[in-house]
Image 1 (tube, rainbow, N blue to C red):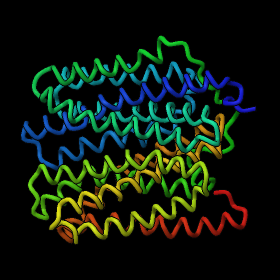
Image 2: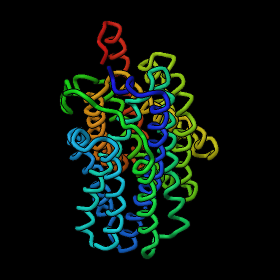
Image 3: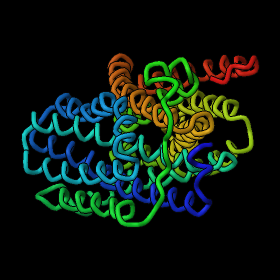
Image 4: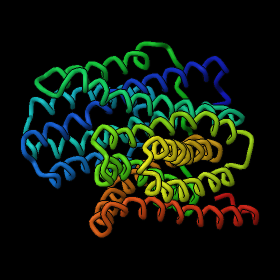
Amino acid sequence: MSAALELTDAQRRAGMTISILCIAVAALAIGLTFPLLALLLEAKGFSGTAIGINSAMGPLGILLASAFVPAWIARFGAKRFIVFCILTSGILLILFKLLDWYLVWLGLRVISGAVMAGLFVASESWINQVANNNQRGQVMAIYNIALSAGFASGPLLLGVVGVDGWAPFLIGAAIMFVAAIPMAFITVTAPRFDGTPSFNVLSYVKVAPTLVGAILLYAMMENSTSAMLPVFGRRTGLEDPAALAMLSAVVIGGMFFAYPVGWLADRFDKIRLMTFLAIICVLGILIVPSTTGTIWLTYSVLFVWGGAGASIYTIALALQGERFSGADLVTANAAFGVLYGLGSLVGPAITGVAMDLDDPNGYIWVMSGVSAIFLVFTIIRQRAKQRGDPG
């Protein structure tokens, strides 16, 4: 019997609500931290390369730590571990201000990435474990909406607070400490992740190849777009506010489409739905260069494109919970963390090189290329599924 079935409906709802609330509030602080550190380094005169290397330390920490998260959750329990990760993130923010040296920041970013890996693997495992199969897509959509809203609000808050002095660091740390309060003090029953996993993080590639492709695509799209889409917009002649608004269109699209696609995922074949979304990802980004003369049309296309890309991740999370439970689910989510870290490192690097070779459309070619690869792969996996292979 799964841990989810051992919980009452009220316990499931309470657990999901508290977990989503914690991760949404924590995402607000994380969304504030990323641009804060980059802007402070830029103000000190560090090169773009140096800022990029510093930013890459977070995904590196995710990549290095994710495989160890299942053992940490098994030892400390999901609830205690989530609280530890949130409080540690708040302390790290204070340390960034206290230890204001570039090389020290590199190490702190690695540690911060490792803590983030623990937070997201534990939270996603918790939510997926207690969700019912007939509503799993909708639940994971709500989780992604809350997460995106938190990330999107962070830069807005930073714009109000400013980057100077202790204020942004203390506010970010305070937000983290507040995020831990519901999980720490409200009585909620954590799911158990019983048993010994039937695979490890490395063998997950063979166990669930479609999900591997989905998370790699999402990580490359999300991080390459965050880093390079405003640059693409500027190089096509847009002013900075308009170029940054392109990124906003992508994020808002992801939030808008999450729940409708989650609802569809609960009612239709998930791999076929991902295949359809992959087609939108390929065609949508290819249309963008032809729309840059009409900015509202550009925003509209990016809105739909961003919604399709983010929805692939929503479906992947739902498939994850549908296929795995207990210790297998935590291991699968840890594999997601490793793959996300890998995609986060590789995606922006490849996109940057491509834009040097074909400025500015290298971004378009990389995004359409990785989407096309995933599209072909989902078609192949769909045929394999029809032969009885669940991967």
